[in-house]
Image (cartoon, rainbow, N blue to C red; front, side, top):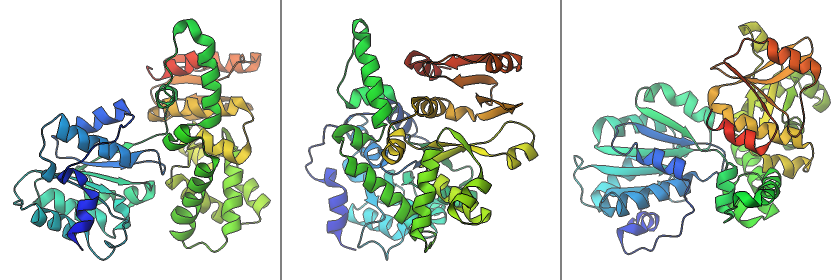
Length: 390
């Protein structure tokens, strides 16, 4: 390992002009609020939602606003060629040696793509137990964090970075729309429904960017990681997932369509879920109902969904956004006598997504019959924005 590599990763150790970041204030302030805690902060989420950029923003703020010496801040991307034969502990020790820091001195470590290192959870635990460090680490794999979590129990704080919401989309687009120009807001929202919230794609509009992101997830996170030989089956499965976004997914049906076993279909579903490119929602009810009933599927980003299916079925796209707004409330869906209510949250809010539509009489009767803390029919941008304050 050469000192040159570490200096390239940490240009603030010398003279450095920071780029003009477009800040995602909620995430940035949340990460900075944890700077004095002992918790290992695990940043996770779909590829290219901005985890690395958020780390750089935190570093900039630590130096410029919180007075942390640049030589006490260390960033490294652990998937970098040239570091593959070195453990996390060896790389961190090299940083301490390079900056002539004692192990008792407080340092901030930013470990990007931490899951590329075998046994990373044990190494993070060792850092936590033996060094005076604040650790921010990232990975794009949910299953990796779940599988290794036992070693970090009580030591970690997991923060999922989602695609841009509509307000962030406006900020990235440089749009500030006055109330008098509400018609422009609706126009921008329709553009958001088409584009989605992947930060770089919002800035560039380059369709090749989304195609490359999909390829990276399919090849790097699924085919390569799980040693799958049938690439066509994985791609076809993904297309069907995007087609079913906002709808129930029956594994028996999808396995027949693709000519694979139900077990293989279930495995593929879990693989895609672990990358955050899809989310699943269970049916409300007792445990056996939850396990036996089909799950509803939502795309990890509506722009990715539209790149695969085309921009059609605005109702399903809008429902996907409603899911993101209440995802933290752990919703399930209700199904009774063939009538479905989209979401019933853990804190007992009943929510139906109806973009520009009204409830049918049958839906309305079921909607009013459920014992709930509150009921919302979300049929517009205004209703969607209100969910974030629920």
